[in-house]
Amino acid sequence: MITVNAMGDACPLPVVKTLNAIKGLRGPECVETLVDNPTAVENLRRLAQSRGCSFSSEKRGEAEYRVLLGVSAEAELPAEEAPACYIPPAKKRVVVAVTADHMGEGDPKLGRTLLKGFLFALGQLEELPAVILFYNGGAALSCEGSESLEDLKALEGRGVEILTCGTCLNFYGLSEKLRVGGVTNMYSIVETLAGADLVLRP
Amino acid sequence: MRERKPRLFFSFAATAAAMEAERLCREAGLPGRLVPVPRQITAGCGLAWMTEPAEGERVRAFLTERGAAYQDCVLLDF
Image 1 (cartoon, each protein chain N blue to C red):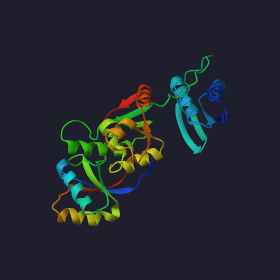
Image 2 (cartoon, chains in turn green, purple):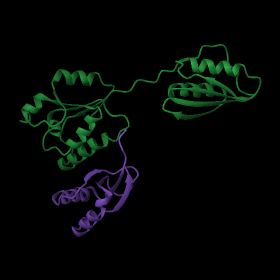
Image 3 (cartoon, rainbow over the protein chains, first blue to last red):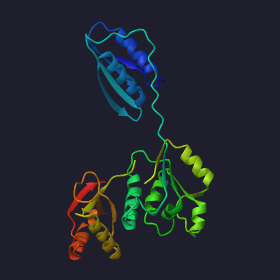
Image 4 (tube, rainbow over the protein chains, first blue to last red):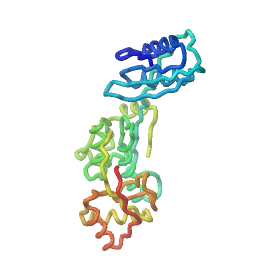
């Protein structure tokens, strides 16, 4: 087995070094590459796929991964090409727009129960939304008396921006009753919605 | 990543029954809350009363006494 130490190497060096090691092989053998980030592991996985090599990886520490490429006799020999550097896709910016105190049309009591469930379930997402906007009837959800306050505070604590329309708070007499997040205006609401990759409207 | 811990879920055969159970539990000050039923549980309607495992007996007795028949009671890491 050949060991390639690519700890601390920036992309595409781990792939380049591994390719060079494969090139030097005289027959079927294992190449072990040590890297310090999961992107390098994924790049090596793609390298293995493209060359018909077997692949396995193990996380050995906070920033330490061991990747094993099994190079068989049938494995395609590397061509002289510059390996592409993989850049993980940027996180999607999700904005949730809560426009009423209920979810969907129909029975209002059921709608309020559904919205409460929706805001609870948001907190179970692996990738949380960037912002939750509350406007018109939705403004009541971030104010005193809302049964979703604890859920919203927990979301805010995990980095989700909670914003409620100031015009709406004023209209409903709730300006003094906001209990989570900040107050926003229509320009910010428009910018936030326009800047989103995805808007969820329960 | 949020922390998962064991929680008890009481599911119901109908949405209206779950909402009624919520009303009763809250009036009586029982700990817990109504939540969408986790995917791991497949019973009846989509709402369940979620509470701490230690409160299970109290909630179970209360729901039975008040005629709020739950369909299932499941312990789950959630």
